[in-house]
Image (cartoon, rainbow, N blue to C red; front, side):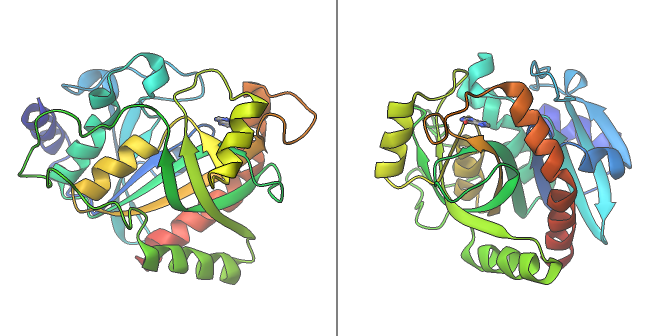
Length: 267
Ligand code: HPA
């Protein structure tokens, strides 16, 4: 299936050969509207499935941004949609086979760290996998990565520093911290958020970790960026809604795009 998807995409894109992959999270898909040389609907690609979350378009977009060839996922596959964890990470394997060296993975997240405010951006320095599943379970594809991959530096340290410096230069305040993945689709309870804080998380969300594990396993550099869309349950007194999450992502969109474009330029 991987071969089929890669062949299909290479044919459709005339061997575009992207070097940077970008997974655009909830409300952050705009970048792929702004830059779009070739778009392929997920429903056309062997092994891909249609995205079921509103606010996600469901297409692969190929574009040159600041002189770099990129492939963007406008919408991702979430585990909570009922996809197998293998389906969730399939596009990352496809990107690897297309020649992607660096994956920029973005998401909307809830702030666990009390210092974080809605519409803050956070550079992910590490993660906690609390999804109860690992995307590398099953037969190991030795052509892509090792059976027991080291996860000491999933999020490439020199790129964390690069992103921090870019933030400073652009005058964009950036937070830094640990992202913890739950399966969703229910938001966390206040007790779960307290647990997340105690074990070292700064933000909670429902994605990113499976994709980052596979990218790291496959030898890609990884840059993780969270848009903190709300205070996680119990951190503030207001309840959570998907609408508020999308609104905060919208408020952060412009600085998010400026940051990502500059990162693309510098890597
Ligand atoms: N929890 C989990 N996922 C999220 C949240 C949250 O509070 N906000 C946006 N995505």
